[in-house]
Image (cartoon, rainbow, N blue to C red; front, side, top):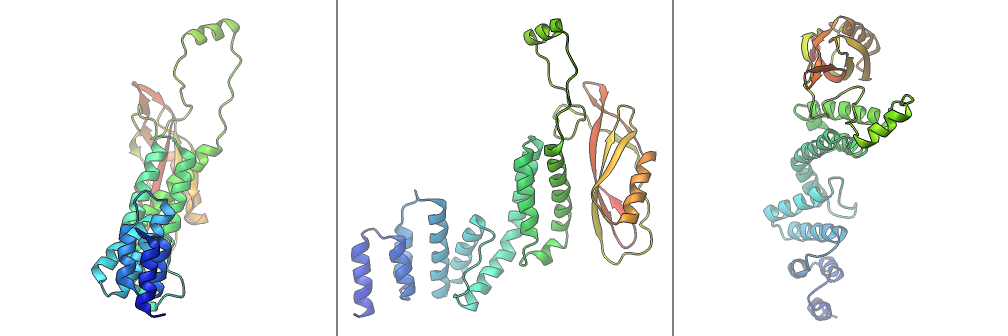
Length: 298
């Protein structure tokens, strides 16, 4: 059976066309005909079917040497699944094309995922935010992105994503405060006129908060020498007087420096956070970058 007859039979049996037909045409090196079938497929299909269609469209365009169109198609594949890589049985040229497009498009995807995760965090959707922050950090560890992720702005974004991920996980792990016994009369009154739930410690996620203003927040110099930059997150609870009530290091830098940084918080002071003019406790995250010369704080 000749190739032309095989293609004709495929097209005749496919009607408007099917993905299986397109895949068989691609395997038969009938790339133009495979593209026609792929373009005729209906739009109301599952996400997996659409992703598979975009993958084969990219492969057909690469085989035809239509580089610009192939790059656009590969970009669509990566946008749907940033972790996708073509199978090992494709040519090195195809794998190289996918790698090149991944390196170009993934930084924008990372920033988009971080923005979505931060919005979830601000809405107090801590489980969803922690999951998406973890996915963002995982994407930055991808071999095709490691070189770019090691430099600003993605290196700064990695520090922020890690810090907010830890804060989200901490919020999930914090049990609700036990309520004190309430007189029966008070229960009846509160049932008639329920008041707002006041958090014990406010954060940036509270929309009605005026954050604390720094009066004194100096970090110690890094002891000794460091040949590479180091990133960490220091978290403090500022009380109603503007003093640091407690301090932790959710993302450590180095044991000796962490102790110095935590000790330094005892001397920090702020104008306290307020809600409707009333001072309240506030949990504040401080991003720290230690360079070979000096620590920096955001």
